[in-house]
Image 1: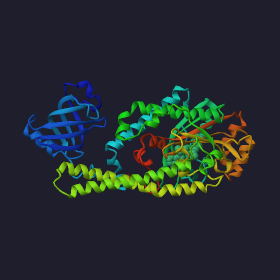
Image 2: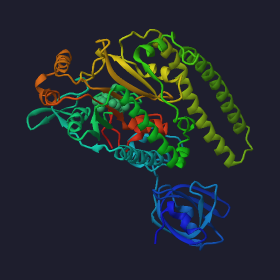
Image 3: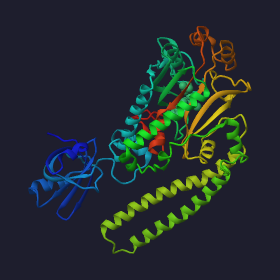
Image 4: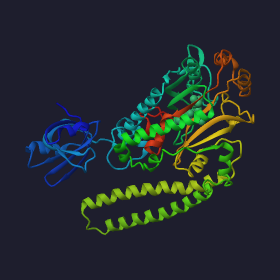
Amino acid sequence: MRTEICHLEKHEGEKASLAGWVANKRTGKGLVFLELRDGSGFCQCVVDENQVKPEVFELAKGAALSASLKLEGNVVKDDRQIGGFELQVLSLEIIQNVEDYPISNKEHGVDFLLEKRHLWLRSKKQWAVMRIRSRTKFAIHQFFQERGFTQTDSPIFTGAACEGTTTLFESDFYGQEAFLSQSGQLYAEATAMALGKVYTFGPTFRAEKSKTRRHLSEFWMIEPEMIFYDLDMNMDLIEEFIRYVVTDIFTTHKAELEILGRDTKLFENIGTSFPRITYDEAVEILHGKRDVNGVSAIKTLENDLEEVKASIVEKNKDIEERETAIAAGGMKKGKVNFNRNKIDTLKNEVKDLEEKERNIPQWLESAKNFKHGADLGGSDETIITRLFDTPVMVYKWPKDIKAFYMKRDEEDDNYVKGVDCLAPEGFGEIVGGAQREDSLELLEQRIKEHDLPMEAFEWYLDLRRFGTVPHAGFGLGFERMVMWLTNVPHIRETIPFPRYYGRLFP
Ligand code: 4AD
Ligand code: MG
């Protein structure tokens, strides 16, 4: 019977049969090391010339990357291995050998990998990301279910825009104009009036012709909606929720985080409360007029720039030294390969640093010139969160840059009770939410101001006509959350088959 790699510990000191694919292969004197993957984990399988029949050894030598195979052997504890075990192979059968597997273990360009996404998903890092994605979804459901929320679904075909008309995907619904849903919120408000505390968790669509590292055309959103919640209670819930999910992943998926090289210091600190600043305070931070704990965001970024420059010099020197050593000759083949790989990695790191070296001065410039009333851009969010090592809440926003449904601030009609939760380390907005406008008259006024078709919102206005109550909610961008947890460079690596401007295949 086949044992899954993740269950090898039950067979320590015994024989076991594994089956899967070759993830990596190394050969030594009289030895072949096959790294096997079977979806549940990775396991080093050692084929020793002296322990197996000659034909088995030949098969092992000939097994190429991504060949599918079955193996039998003895399970031995080995703490150096990812899963903690090694298989000492006794027999082996190839199901299908492979020629020219497109994805080798050297560095590939990201465009190439995206073309081959259906195969790229097999590599170790992508495996780790997908495992974390799956668990994050589970933790989210668990959080809300434990707290008595009812999960309700919202339609994907919709007749009205929720988040502005500029990012709508148009569709044809039996001859009627329809759009793919930008957000399930309006429907969640309706189900909240029936069920009290609800959340939706579904795909949402935004036609954004941008290729930033944070935008997808199709992404998943979690949208809780709660009756008798105000803005403060909404922020309390956002904080508890984010902390819960981060802690869950940090405790259950340590091995995956390690594969991804994720620095988890921040996750350990997630217990401290998330700072809450108003939009106006955020603008002062950008202008260098407000310090946080005696530290200026602008000065911090200037220091970052100096560090980046120094690091580039250091890494380039390291590259040069390794290249000189290889060129001098006399180095063993294994060591040459090791150094070549290291050089590749260093070169990529330098490329990233050079990008930062170009970006930081632009960010500083744009922060200095930030106009009060504008929306925060990605770089502004990076600057603001740079001062904190937890997520930050920015609330009380100018009404003109926020959606029509947000409740106006009683003290100043120019502001609304919206909140964005920004993740640190340059990830930026992961949550957008608000207390909702619960007055029929004010809501009608806002719909007119936003130039939206009143007829499309008649059903929504019924929620304010028939027993309106204060309520609030928010939306977490699921892939943004996974991106932050896994620290992948681009949001498209957080979903099995990303859809974004320019990509419909595979
Ligand atoms: O801030 P947004 O637009 O808010 C809403 O849609 C509200 N109706 C939510 C609510 O109150 N129920 O989007 C919410 C979150 C953002 O904070 C971001 O994390 C994510 O959705 N998001 C995107 N993620 C990936 N690609 C895109 N193009 C995204 N646009 C928004
Ligand atoms: Mg938003």
